[in-house]
Length: 90
Length: 402
Image 1 (cartoon, each protein chain N blue to C red):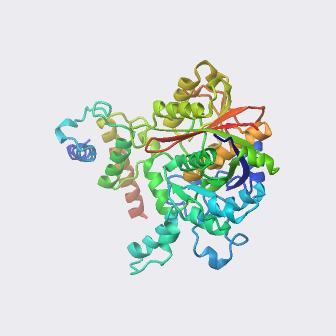
Image 2 (tube, one colour; image 1 turned 180 degrees about the vertical axis):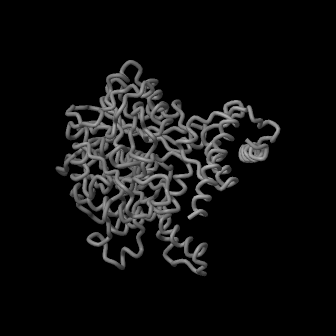
Image 3 (cartoon, chains in turn brown, yellow; image 1 turned 90 degrees about the horizontal axis):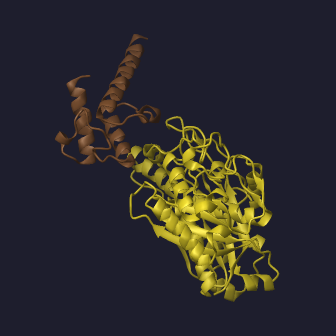
């Protein structure tokens, strides 16, 4: 996982929840940060815009913290890159 | 204070275009949820809705009149016509002057607004249709009903999201009970199948990608619905005197606000509204035989509603039959409470409790008698109908068999 990706995820969460960036670390869990279900939906919206990805509901059900979220975003970015490559190859 | 009779019923929704059709679908446990037809759903995370399939204004309104009325208000008028006809209301000039209309709607004619905004934002047009405002306003249903029947008494609309029609029927009930009016038309209508509105629901991540399975462990969210339900309310004594058919009585109405969270439900708020409705009706919890649940099919609502029902009913919670008819007519937002009140009236009148359709797997967090999949023949004396809105505004109606 790149530092850049982690930074962007942290920033999306902090901006959306309006909390200081330094309170959001790779090891923070959402409960600690006081993130409820509506906050989570807003964070997903922010991440979809930030990374130009589509985050399906099924992918987020088990996400409990920042690290899970970064892993999920990385996976979706890889899928997006693979899809773009396939399209370019055709 | 006067007892209040329901003497007229009108409905149009995914389950049918008349009360008789809706009653038959509820009895069969037949869900009206199907792939969305009225809007292109290919760019949505969900595919299904509970629409009035194949609906056209033709046969209900002439073309020129329909130009003035958004689909949501057309539904309101159609249901009101049926309710008034079935009640056999004999209009006098005095009755027209004093009759009340109270309707509920959550989004009003936002579908019309959606089209107008598309024109200016996307198409770069410099004007929107001049009827956009009168078609969009949430009170259009009440206004067109008043014009339809020449009713000049108190008429207004309540917008409390998913509780709108519950608050509307409750207010109308109190107006009749107190003697403020001798006849009220009350209910709600909604038509939210417009791309912009559906996208907004998608973003909330509460809509099921498949169907609506209230109280089932594998539930995945709500499914949007549309339509209208309308009731005619009169003082019981006058209704009996004129030989009207009394379908059931409304006996109590309770409201509360969670004062908690803008979207998350609260068991305390829900329980408070149920207790208020039963107190208003003067009925003990143990006398309630059926609960038409809010039962949206979201993870949060159904588990929270179960906690609330247990808090209110205690040991009786295991004995009371509970079902969510949203599993069949979908979540019709501002019309939901009207369709559900109507389903509750039919349950009391006919002695058939509607099921919770699409039910698969028991959930320990929703361990109630939820009448899974098949309607139940059971005579019930008292019932309540629950509505708990986004924004934490709750409305519960208590009904009694006549």
